[in-house]
Amino acid sequence: MKLRYRRVTLPLLHPFTIATGTSTERNDVLVAVEHGGVVGCGEAAPSRGYGQSADSVVEALPRLAAALGDDPFAFEVNADRLLAAARGQYAAVAAIDGALHDLAGRLAGLPTWRRLGVSPGRMPVTSFTIGIDEIGVIERKVAEAAAWPLLKIKLGTPDDERIIQAVRRCTDAPLRVDANMGWDLERARQMCRFLADHNVEMVEQPLPRGQEDQLADLHADSPLPIYVDESCHHAADVVRLAGCVDGVNLKLSKAGGVTAGLRFIHAARAAGLKVMIGCMVQSSVGIAAGAQLAPLCDLADLDGHVLLARDAATGLDCRDGRLLLTDAPGQGVTLRDDLADPSGWTVVQ
Ligand SMILES: [Mg+2]
Image 1: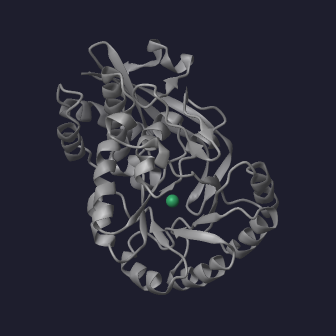
Image 2: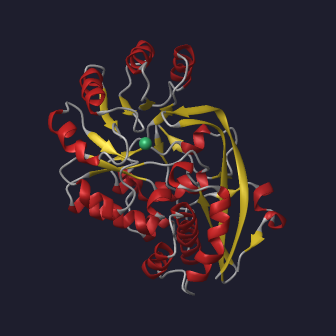
């Protein structure tokens, strides 16, 4: 199999702030895998918080490409080899694994969801995310998001109550909250009680990563379901969280792609946990890979591409808050012409 990549800068529609920082653009890496004249595409959306960058992705690609076998349909073997060679570069692994699933679908003439036996009729509504901002800006963003049936509000600031009160002045829509590790145990307890009175349906990552031993205490008397994201990357993390939380947030760039994502979902089900499928702020190349698994999950948070000023691909549409899985082969998205131009790609092998 031949592998090539190109870097892509994706400007955001608005600066996006969460408890751990602000971003105005994403620097991602598109990966293409070719076999028998057919090409599949994936996206690496690296996260600084996890020791990843576009540079570290590009640096990892030759090592990961060398680990790949010759059979694009040998997902489990390829995933084992890629994960063993990852050295923390799971966004790069996710890009290659996503490209393999896209490629296999195109070779088979089947959409990835159908090849995996997933039912698109079970697609959950995806939330639309409102980042941390001045109260007036948050109110404007909530008004602009009126078409979305479900909002996810980023918190983890001293002003969290004021933010929720402002959102509630603008909408009665159900809300989810993501604190992105911004609270300690006492603040989390206090906030869960406050949020339960404001039609909030769940709370994500209330405590810092590394403080998982406090989650069971919080979970025991929380009026709201508790999910974790930064605390849970892989199937092995899922097992340790059984009984301590209600659910876990699967992101393909944390877990290492669609194949690792399936393992994560099965581990969560075996542990009695709910699954949310989330994403980075990234293009619809990566979001489409997650969308293939979304009907296997309880909650979806797959709006990363909608937060961009300009997407890298077309083909992933949304109706009434649900991403649409089509009959197009593979992940069902097509790169923009300027990005598909072969001159912008670097051959790895
Ligand atoms: Mg999160």
